[in-house]
Image 1 (spheres, rainbow, N blue to C red):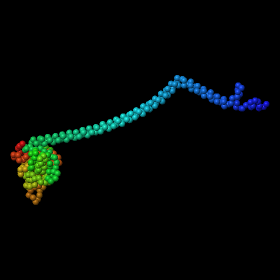
Image 2: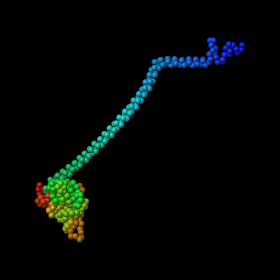
Image 3: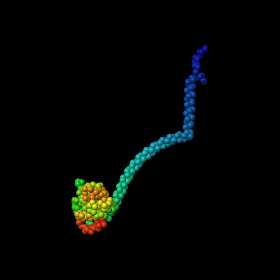
Image 4: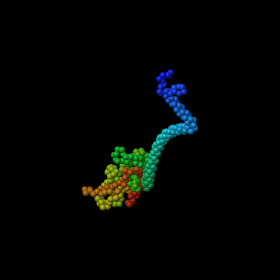
Length: 316
C-alpha cells in the first residue's frame, strides 16, 4: 500500500536508528550538551593543574599589591601634606620670632650707638667742667618755654641744686666753650634760661683782638646772627670777618672772657656815629643738650688781655 503502513509516512527530518526514530532537534541538543561537557571537563583539568593555581595566585597578588600600593601612596601623600602644613606653620612661627629678635637686636644696636655717642658728649662735658675755675652746676636741656615769651630754655636743675636768678649759663660744643645765656627764673627742680639770641638779651662784649667794646643783642631767632651795637666807628679798620667776640665782664652779670661768637658782617650807618656788627653765635642751639651754670659773683678777677677763656678763680 503506497504511502501507507502502520506508522504511515515518516517525516523528512527524522532518522530511524536501532528501531527508534530521532528528530534533528534532539540530535542538535545532544551535540550541544556534549560540547559543553567537554569544555567543562577541559576547564576542570586546567584548573586542577598547578600552573593555573600559581597563575591565579600571582594575579591575585598583583591585584592586591596594586591596591595596597595605591592605598599606601594615598596615605603617604596625606601624611606628607599634613606634616608639610605643620612644618610650614612652625616655620612661620620661627620666622616671626626671628623678626622679633632682629628688631630687638637693631634696637639694642641703636641704643648702644646712642650710649656711645652720649658717653663721648659727657666726656667732653666732663673735660670742659674740669677746666672751669668757677663753681659750676651741670644741667641738661629738658624743654622749651611753653609760653614762648622769651624763647627760654628749660634746664633740669633748680634752687634745690643751688641755681639762682642771673647766674651765667655756658656750654661746650665742638671743642669750644661759649655763652648760652643767663638764668631768669628758678623753680625747685627746674629753671628757665634766657638764651643770648632772645630779643631781650643784652650782653656787654668786646673784640678779643682789637678790644673795642659794644653791646650784643639778640634778634629773637636762634638761626639769626646777633647784633653788636655801639661799636666806635673808628674801629672799622681793626675789625675783620671771623674775629672772636667775648664777654667783657662789664655790669657784673657775665664773667669776662667767655666766647660769644665770630664776626660775620659789619654795617656802617651813615647817620650813626657807631657801627653795627653781625656776630654769629658759637653755640648751635639746635644741637644743645648739656650746659653748666656758673656763679660769677664767686670769682676773683684776674684778666689776661690775650686770654679768651675764663680767668676767675675756682671756688667750690
